[in-house]
Amino acid sequence: MLAEWSAECTADDPILVVPWSDPSDPSGMRFVDLRENPYDLDHLPEAERNPPLMQALRSLNAPRSLLFTAKCDAWSLDSDELEALILNLDPDLDGHPDNPTGFASYIDLLWRDRQIFISFHQQQQLLDRLTRRAAALDHPEAALDFVLRPALIDLTGPQEGFAISLYVKAIGPDLDTAWHRWAAALDDVVSLLRSKDLLLA
Image 1: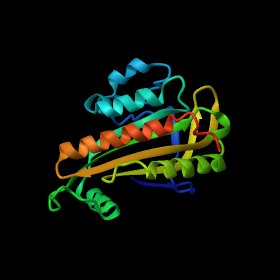
Image 2: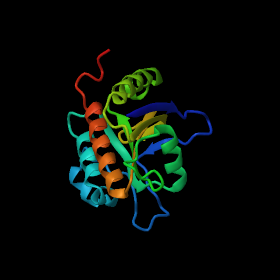
Image 3: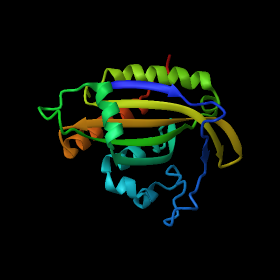
Image 4: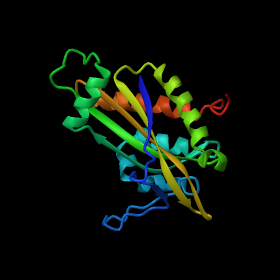
């Protein structure tokens, strides 16, 4: 599996603010704290349409998880995204190199431990560890990208720190194959994030 991470922490980069809401969206999109309200998963259309994403959200917000989620989405790759992914992966597309397709998702993640949340250095070490482990996963048609970015949480009082955007993408000769490859890769990445020894040096 192709696994990389980067940081977008300059003054011009966006900040993840939690809780958030989108006043321009007629459906009233907003932050849903799935730690406190796990059944609200049923109100996330992107999760309803993609059961592997729903399972990932359920797992990442479970009581023993080190993280919780703030936002997510899933989509079919457009031509530019697909071209970039193919150049990075250069995979065997099962004999259909002229008509590949792809599927992707992202999940914004925040560490529950305040000392990790506020520390760029600790998160850098964790992302180094996660990408090394993810690179060993047997998903040659999938890619993982972590993006470290500034975050502001104001649930019980304002706290400034850092969030991680998790992107998982996969390609295949058709959308169904790409979707199943994405689902398998996402499941394994979530297992890494739930590893009991993740915080061990």
